[in-house]
Amino acid sequence: MRIFLFTFAASLLFWSSTFALTMRCGNHLIEEGDPQVKVLEECGEPSMRNRFAQEGTLQAGVVPGIQYSVMEQWTYNFGSTDFIYYLTFQNGRLVHIETGDYGY
Image 1 (tube, rainbow, N blue to C red):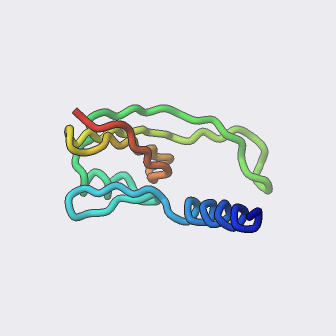
Image 2 (tube, rainbow, N blue to C red):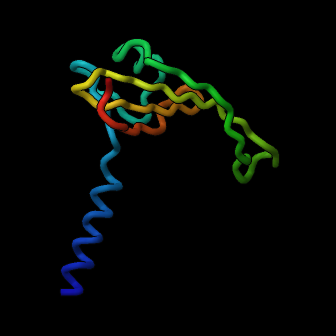
């Protein structure tokens, strides 16, 4: 029984980490890694945009210091028959897609 539970838990971890969340805009599929321009062309203007800077440290091998990333969160509300989508961009690339409740 323990082997079954371990195997089941390991398979869930594997499958959850291999599939990134996507968003469909008409016939187009939006996924992490897409540039902002593609998302804007395929999905149109978002319902809301929020722009902010995120502070981080520079990677090893680079002159030590602080690096700022330009972050944006776009909200798409496609109405009451679809979910609200929250898209997070870092330096112009889609890095995270999150779904909320049904739209309005």
